[in-house]
Amino acid sequence: MIERYSREEMTRIWTDQNRFQAWLEVELAACKAWSRTGKIPEADVDLLYKNASFDIDRIREIEQETHHDVVAFTRAVSETLGEEKKWVHYGLTSTDVVDTANGYLIKQANRILEEDLDRISQTLAAMAVKYKNTIMMGRTHGVHAEPTTFGLKCALWYAEMERQKERFRHASKGVEFGKISGAVGTFAHLPPEIELYTCEELGLTPAPISTQTLQRDRHAHYMATIALIGSTLEKIAVEIRHLQRTELREAEEFFRKGQKGSSAMPHKRNPVSSENISGCARVLRGYMVTAFENIPLWHERDISHSSAERIILPDATILLDYMLTRMNRVLSQLQVYPEQMLRNIEKTYGLVFSQRLMLMLIDAGMSRERAYDTVQPLAMKAWENEIPFRPLVEGDDEIRRTLQEEQIADAFDLSYHTRRVDILLRRAGIDLDGNRN
Image (cartoon, rainbow, N blue to C red; front, side):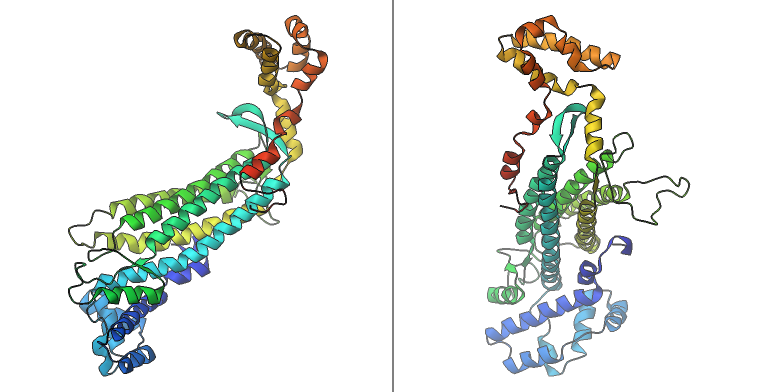
């Protein structure tokens, strides 16, 4: 992933230094496993742990000759050892090392992503409570529908993010696996205990059955979950972009002193972070497709997946970490304008109360069809002539015969639409102190 969309903490996991270190830890763990079976003397294992090291430049130099990175790695490590070097890579195939190390690296990345997800959930829960009574217009098809609150939007995002967290926990468990089963997965040259002990040492789960590789449905599920999380972030980002439109201006990203929105127009304040997140989400969905293409490998293994995974596994985790961090910052600093939200409600002349009025007429004895046909012409007249809806209602003889004045007034009460906000927050898993249940 390019530096622009990377954070050092996550990027460090996917450096060549850390990748080769993971390979070395797999090799050493396998040797330790062999010693538990009595195959490798403990003294040799001690020497391996004490002396085994690598030099990246030397690995690259050897790879120029071998055109095989794992062979280059094992030879470079062997050069740092004495007689004990004969045990390096004993009974293993390259993918035993690479796939197991990838599971080990992904596990490291997952801990960071889990922390990111927790942070953004906490932010959304706090926002849901802070803005629970901040009334705004709910829109369907981009058109005014009925009042809602900004806090309910945040609660909706929170609930979705909690579902994504559960999906991520499940997908993480499914990909934090290792395999030390040999060239075609038959354990021909090593007992299954080596796999069990090696994975135990690394904190991974041994694959119940494998070929030369771990099966890529695991990685596809993981990448699909990452793409799902990215799509939820984009969903939030798109809403912020809409709310920041000049015609709405109900919320906007924080615009810091010295920031510029355009090279040509000094007045511009654009939702650049949210737009950035929308673009990044598209990349994650593309990586998901690549992961699905990696599932059908030839027979017991080919390497068509290898080149793709060298890109998508680091990039997807790095990019999602960046997106979660940036969106959390956007939400934490979001500028919300309650007065503008109320002004926007008034732009449709009170038409948003039409359903409440219709239901009151039904409750008073009208048929549904009659109530609908009574209210709709008044609503269309208000819209087409840009005049308030309520005086038209109050002047309609049939409505006046059916409803009392105080009932008509109740029909136009904003608080009617928000009276169950607390119930909804609790149902979403948020208590009224802004904590998660």
